[in-house]
Length: 472
Image 1: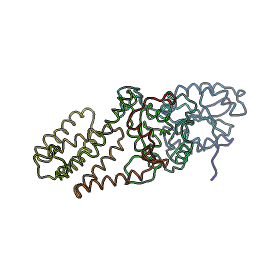
Image 2 (image 1 turned 120 degrees about the horizontal axis):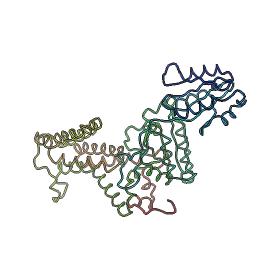
Image 3 (image 1 turned 90 degrees about the vertical axis):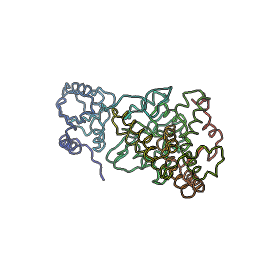
Image 4 (image 1 turned 180 degrees about the horizontal axis):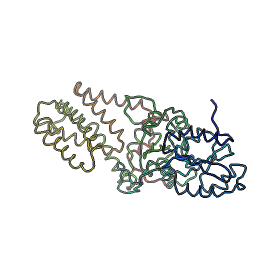
């Protein structure tokens, strides 16, 4: 199929551009006709993306030109008379349309078979503030935003190295979403970079409607039954920079404030930014506490339910976990109901106006607390252990891994209800098999550095190492 291009006929080019952009159908697509010397010209841009001050100065300058000032070559005109930094020449209609819809100002001039692309766009954006779900006690308070060029600038500010590479590509036949691969060319594995780039270019999708999530689902094999996350996300520029320095690849998707870290193994989720803003001993302690607490979110309620169901399997010194006063509702049913209610409250809180958050919290506490016990829906022990699990789940910053553990916790409870201790063992074996069959986007081991075993890296999972001066 032939590619449509501009020609030397101005009127034909103008009609072609107006049809391609559908100027008459959308009020915000502007075509501003002007006169430059003795030649007709037209500016195409999106109202709201163009910087009015810059556009006004460019128009004021070029409209003062005389016919004898105009050079025979468009490149000479662009170099002499367009007083702006980011300027290129375009000939293909498809590329011109994509750039205009992305916010670029396009100048079409009579007598030339190319258009001048002036990248003087601006996007609506919010302030750069600390991410709500990745707060630190010490450290920087900035975070990524929805504007791609701001995010790349935050990384450039931290890594002032010419080896820091930013490769941009557009994904989506209709959305043409900008996606940037960011890595250090002297640190990242070239084979890994090539594989990721090849997979990105092979993505065929009309639109990245849900930004990074749409891209993630295109990059991995569709195993719906495997809940383990293959990507780690962060909204912190310092965390992203640290991963780049380790040789990883960062994917920045336009219109989203979180970047994707590739490749990601299971143990990468153990690390947290707070660990590195404290001395090694304190950071190691925080990491171990987080690991222990997060494991409790997986095994606490299943082990408690097993102890209640089979008290003879456990020693006498933990007899305090037994329920003093049972009610008519089976314990397994109580646990499952509270699991679902907690998630329902989380979803409801997302849609609760800020002014009503306090009232919502009071009502939720009453329903799941004193009233539920007095109505003999739940025993106090169920609410106690589920409250701990719900709060402890927030020690892990990855929502995806948190819900992975939740699904396996539900599986353990159901299997224990039917098979007792064998059900718990079956659930653990099933979880280990799924982890073992999980691979990363680069088809490396999901369990690295446990498999293949790397002693130094494995020890660093539990003990926060001092900064390596030769590698920092």
